[in-house]
Length: 173
Picture 1 (tube, rainbow, N blue to C red):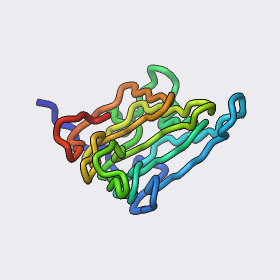
Picture 2 (picture 1 turned 120 degrees about the vertical axis):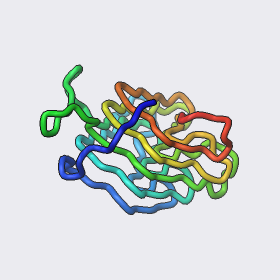
Picture 3 (picture 1 turned 90 degrees about the vertical axis):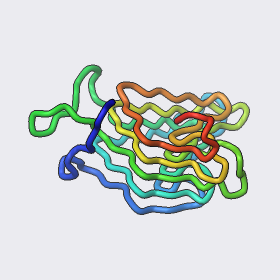
């Protein structure tokens, strides 16, 4: 068994908590829809996301088209340390998508990313992040994240603990 406690709260520099919205409880981003147009870039480091909710999809994050999300853009191989201990650089905890209007489809308790035909794909890049106690309700199938269209998700050195999707037979992503 693995026991993982959350890092001390005072080590985070950005807090995104207790937000709600129709899509992307905390952050909604819409990038360019044409091929070859520039990306919208969102980077966050040492961030604590907690208790964000979306009526629809993407409990904490929701994006469409050419959006490049980076959570914890540290140098490759460089750990985040606090008081001499190696810990997750960011924590994403207890976020929820309620899938109103799309019951039974993946909503992404943490994030939803998609793109229209002909637009550049969006990208989720997460590293050194603890994902815990996130939920995809009302028949949802992805407790953490969903990518639609040609969108892409990359997770490096992340920890997934206690995330739940209502269907019970699908995974974190």
